[in-house]
Image (cartoon, rainbow, N blue to C red; front, side, top):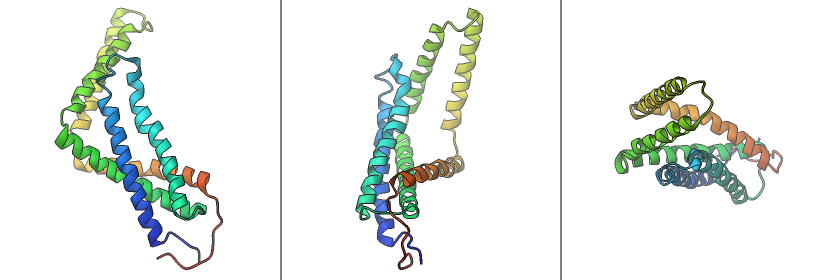
Length: 198
């Protein structure tokens, strides 16, 4: 019978998921707290993708190789996929709950403050732009952009628990695709025959 993911492997994957979740939470906080110091800087638009995508992917890749080493250094595609996906799901759960709790009970106003910083930066960028036929067109575009940003901010602020749960579940799909990619990159063994999964 084909070997799946045994109990110890699941526990190890969960532990790594918690570690990655804590790191994701810290990276998220960094992207939040660096907004105000960078107000007016052209670097402001790169803070979120840098912390929440580039650094996150880098840390995840490192932890994936560490997880494989912890498993004995060899795993086939199936085991790699299951272990990595468990790690990513736990990461998502830990990071989401931690971030929601922090922004609700510790820093309930920082998102609103950051929103105004980002909106001002967007307005300044559009005002400096020369891609408009007239000042009237520019002002209309700025007004429409402000209105849309305010709507988006309000929808996030008033998001219900059900909507948050739905968003959490939807995010599991890209995490599965990410796990597929990491499993394909890190697999280094063949399927083996042994005892059934515990």
